[in-house]
Structure formats: C-alpha cells, structure tokens
Image (cartoon, rainbow, N blue to C red; front, side, top):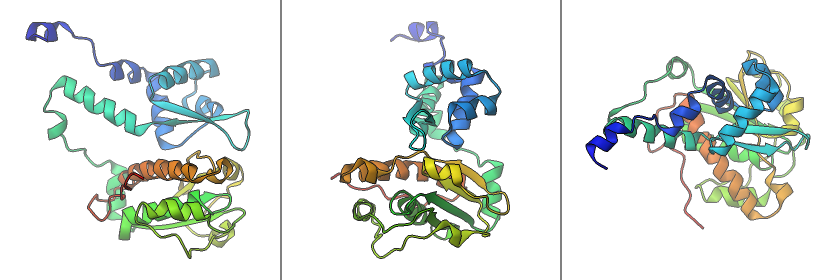
Length: 267
C-alpha cells in the first residue's frame, strides 16, 4: 500500500466504530466487571430491552461478547466481555494510529489500583455450590499469582470433596490441590472481604451479604463435573486462568515472575 493510499483510507478501525457507540461502550464496561443478564444490563445502562438486545447482538457478532445459558434458569442467559479479544483489537487500533504507539505506552494505574497498592493486601472470596472444583481452582490460581499481595479463600453452599479432575487440571499450572478441604460459606459469615466473586449461577441467587460492602462480581462458569470428563475441567481452568490475570491487574498487584499466573504446557 502506498503512502497516498494509506492517507486516503481515513476510516477509523472497526473496533472504534463498534465500541465507540455509547450504548455498546456501556455494555462492554458493565460486562468487563461482571457477567450479567439482559435484565440487569437494562437496569444498569437505563436503556430499553430491545435496544440492549440489538447492541449485544452486534457485540457478539464481532466476538467481543459471549453468552451462555444460566445453570440456575435455562430460560435466562449470562453475557461476558472477552477482554483478551478487546485487548488485541485495542492494540491493533493503537498500531493503526502509529506503529510505535503500543510499544511505548505504559498503562497508568487507576485510582482503584493505587488505593490497593497503598492499602493492606486485598481479601478475595470465591464461591460456588460444591467448593469442589471452580472456586477451589480460582482460589489456587489467584493465590499463586498474587502471592503475599492478597489473602484468598473459597467456599460453597453445599461442600463436597474436591473433584479429582480439578486436582489433575491444576497440576498443569504447577498447583497441587490434593489434601485441600472444601468449606461451607458459613465459615466466612461475618468476615470482611474486599471482593466476593461467585462462579455458580445458582449460588449467585442465594449469596449472603458480607460486612463492609465488598465489591461483588459474577463469573458465569459451567460446572465441569456436570459436563463430564477431564476436558471440561481443562476448559474451566483455562477460563479461570484468563480471568485471574485480569483480576490481578484490577487489584493493582505488581506483575513479577512470581505474581504472573503460570501458563500450563499443552497436553
């Protein structure tokens, strides 16, 4: 492409055209914080349901948002922003403006992240139904990534023994879950956390309130035991690994070789 041709092509990158719409930007930002249902998005951005559904469709077609049926109510669905895909498109957008832009830009810490760095270490609680796979895996991944910068725990509403395939999946990340016990969420009643993250659609419906007004988020992740087979646990582990990496950044935890989530080898 010649210089003249490049200058003639003045259309902004597709990501800017898509995400630049105010409604779609609000949807992306809400879903980057927590997986939500359409009705919750309607209330959050104060737009009619047909408007929200239309723009969600646009975002899904572009691969920026995904959807999965709720395990609590199959008539409902949860939506989730694909932050990895957004990051890739944002990087290519910066490169389109100037090839050297991304390499020379260091992201500034948000006020939230600065407060976390100055405050005591963050306390994070992961919750699911059985505390036998998803929440145990999330706890272990964040503890590995955050080190001394966070206190991490997990629990369930109906605890049962840790699933052997969860133990197997975590070994690929250098984590040994064998010997850990499942806990009932009542063990943490009255305790204060900075973040409470539910991983099960059913538990989200009955999640108790914790003192101190912690930040709450929902990660709608299917129970791998209900799908059956080790591959389902591998998929959940990979999903959690990605989400934990973004959570570490959100918490303002400095990224070092000891606080970067271990990437498992391919099997």
